[in-house]
Length: 60
Image (tube, rainbow, N blue to C red; front, side, top):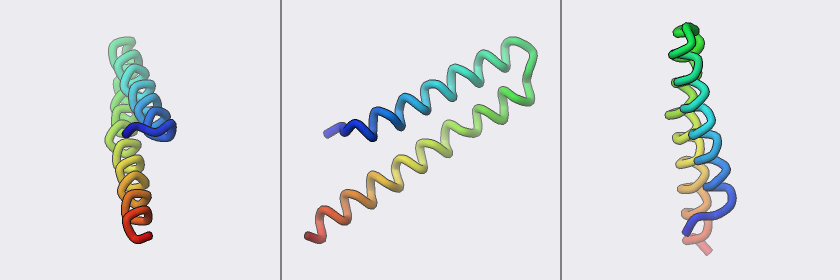
């Protein structure tokens, strides 16, 4: 039940996670923490739109 939009959200989460780890371990700890905060934000954004789409589809 994955759609292309779901894969883009997961790709954005993965890129954010890898980037935050890269920044953290290369001495940019503040930027790493800031970038790590994107992960739950992007996931929440994706979940919101997934639930919205499911509710709109069920109301038809």
